[in-house]
Length: 417
Image 1: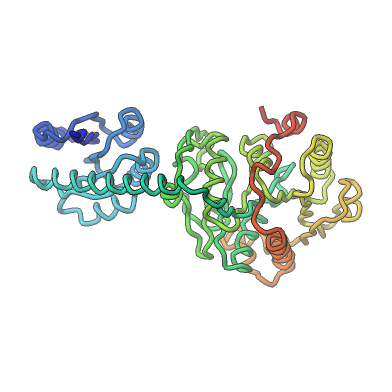
Image 2 (image 1 turned 90 degrees about the horizontal axis):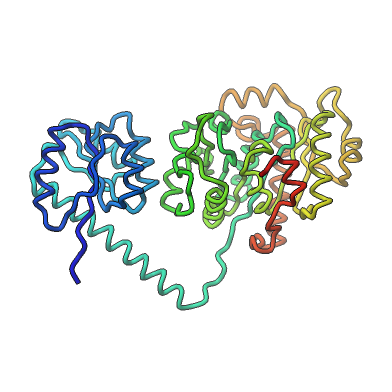
């Protein structure tokens, strides 16, 4: 059977380089040109439309690493080859770290360019063939259900309750208590806070996975999951207020599914109740932590949320109430909070504004900066409770056994369409 030609997309805004590439490629019988674009931004859309095997990038890469990374993520079937000036010793390193499969020093000979293109194509073709063969062999026997990490969702009916602070510290403490793999996910479509709280540079976020994230796999996740010094991995929300490239809710659910297959614990810091990802967290969470503060507006919102959840079939056995800043001067007493919200137990976290403010400003969570503080002690109890519950119940329940919908009245309360 005759082999299909290697499909090549060229990215270059340099006329001389473009002429040189065209001169070489049009003479190769086993290669065909599927497009010419001038920027990496245009290359992302072009790659989706033309499905190239190879993307030759001749654009200057300094300062363009993020776009090259997005191209590698959003066009995962295309292998990127960077054309790097011979005198620029760092160009190749920048390209490979951003997701390129290989580089060609420029100026180049015909043989140098074509040899790299063919070798990269052959290696990638063999890798796909082996993956396909492996997948085919696995379907011949009934596979055992893959273990799934426990998903702990944090939700605040009212903003400013300290939910993100609790989420960040809880993820660190789960890692400390178990030594297992822990992921912290900022489950919101725009503008999160975890990068500041953890002193992380947001050089990759949910936006890098694109609106349709249904094909996201382990390799793509590795490129966007940031590594914190504590050992946890972090997936940040998009850093722009007008971000339109974030995954849609179905894509975000697929991402969560992939993360749960890789990590023992997944802590999801949900955004405002109107954020479309909230419905995904409600559907999938093995444990939902509702964070409130001892203030009447916060309690009023929490009461509305809990009443709607009880009346419309939400599995409240998966729900726990966290009373943050429980000892705040002038706050509603814990007993009154329990009576107002109709709950038997709450986990009370004491008030310690100075320590929390300092740790947030320093980008060092309280669990690391003040590990013996009253707040850290309370959160450590929560982490141990979650670990103990997980040990008692075994693996997390399959999603099919959980609620598969958010009742319409509850959706109305959350502002979900």
